[in-house]
Amino acid sequence: MAQVQAGKAGHGSVFMALEQTAGKGQRGKQWLTASGENIAMSIVVDPYPLNITQQQLLSFAVALACYDLFKKYAGEENTRIKWPNDLYWQDRKAGGILIESIIGANSVENGSRGKDGGRAESRWKWAIIGVGININQVAFPENLVNPVSLKQITGKTWDPLELARELCGFLDFRFRWVVQQSASEIINEYNQVLYKIDQPIKLRKESIVFNAVLKGVNESGQLVTKDSIERIYDFGEVEWVLPS
Image (cartoon, rainbow, N blue to C red; front, top):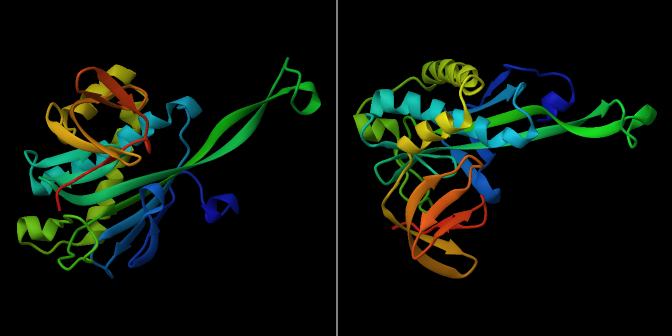
């Protein structure tokens, strides 16, 4: 993000880390990757024509691009996206995604609060997409729950840089795809590969653990579940309780 703010990176810039010891995951968690064994990359995107209210659509597109890559080599049957942005193979985590946004301001004419009599309006200037996918790593920290790598699945050693290049191709395709589709078409494709859809799951909200059936994700990116009634949850409102 610092490179973007300093004007040293723009749309399509890709940064690849050979080793990551302070990477950020969801909800402030760390993402660690062994030296030269995995994909650990950041991509700078100008999200236009998506606007600030459509950030979830970019999130869906990135998740599907990672799914596209991983299913090609690990198999379509067992590769899934776990809400909100984890890549899963069977019941094991193969990767994760984090998107950070840089919001700016536009001056809109005929307003009353902005510069020169205009109204200040927020604009989604940049999205910084962080992707981590386990490729060749076979030894993981003990505190990680059910990690898996492509090498463990296939028994083969892979070139992370070559796979990262291929992932960029899938990302480019999905960026173009997402602006051409309706929100309902996008979310329908996402839900088709959603981990545990129409199955019982266990969630935690604050200190309460409860069971529900996962019904999908809606167009706002919220998790939809059903117990006695249908409920929706925002990102960060609940977390998964997974078997160790």
